Image (tube, rainbow, N blue to C red; front, top):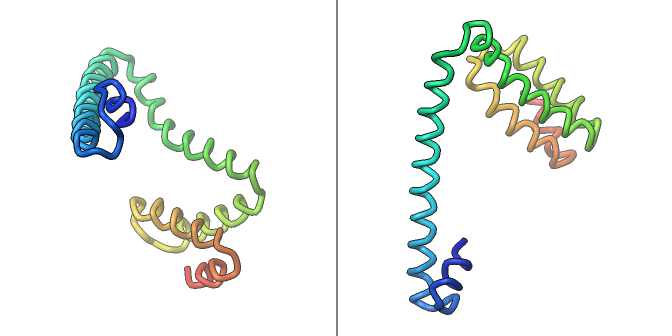
Length: 127
């Protein structure tokens, strides 16, 4: 995005002018993204308010469905990820007693540690 803005403005990359143009382009992009997100949230809120309750209740399954899709994607890449994530997940959910909001970050760091090999597996033994 910055390179495109510099090209359109006719300035050289790496020059002081190029840095200014690139910074302005990134800031403008963030503003446009924020406004588009706000507009989308307002539209979705309006649409959800007119939907029947049975359809709105189906949205409760959206996040678990996304997590399942990600899980399957990693399982296809390597079945060992499935075994590790299921083992850690069951241990955390059933026996940890931790609040639900803490489980996702713990799972992310645990899986990252397990992907590091033997040292990660030693670290997981403490969970």
